[in-house]
Length: 266
Image 1 (cartoon, rainbow, N blue to C red):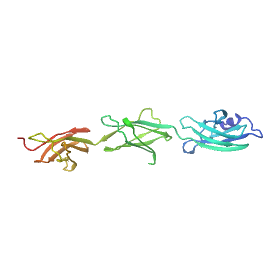
Image 2: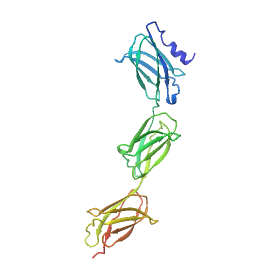
Image 3: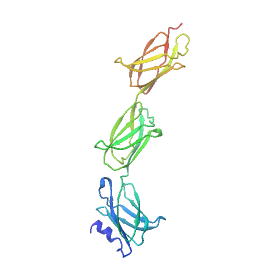
Image 4: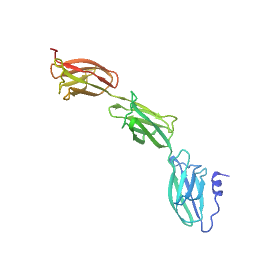
């Protein structure tokens, strides 16, 4: 006896005034979903009928009264679904589709382990189509749910960072963490050699090893400057405001500080 036949024979025969609710439950991709559990209740939560889909995803239930009811469907590794059905004597058909319940979760951090709030997570399928997107919350945590495919490409991107990607599967056994390389930040103060007073509106320029200007800034009223998005490397730092000076500074991590003294000491 087929699973479909077992589903039908588990239900009582329909009488003249009875209603039959039958149909099919589909899973991801429109494939029949066997073993899904269906329940019909009234709006007070009283159970009126139940069934389990057969091998072809079909189901059949008999109701002895008409009215408006809830058709509830659940299956392992799928998101449940519910629909309102209006039942009268005779037969009605209803097809429901359940989405997958797989999920991917983890953190997006920089190389120092700091969470990147607001990082964008994009999930694409093997054809390159975007399946889902989200943004990382505080501490860089994210979650993507409702997944049903076997394999995806997960890409993370954030401001001042280089994007990174990796292949993932739904319901991986552990968290899926991604580490982004964030451009370094070089900060410091520009002061006068004689008085050690800060020099506002001084020009600060960073030149990389190829001679390319990698960053430029003007000091604020306290002589403070900030250069962002600098890849790790050695830079020549030139500052002008009084007599210009040039110094070498190496940026090896995400942040370095380098103070500059302008003018000859008295």
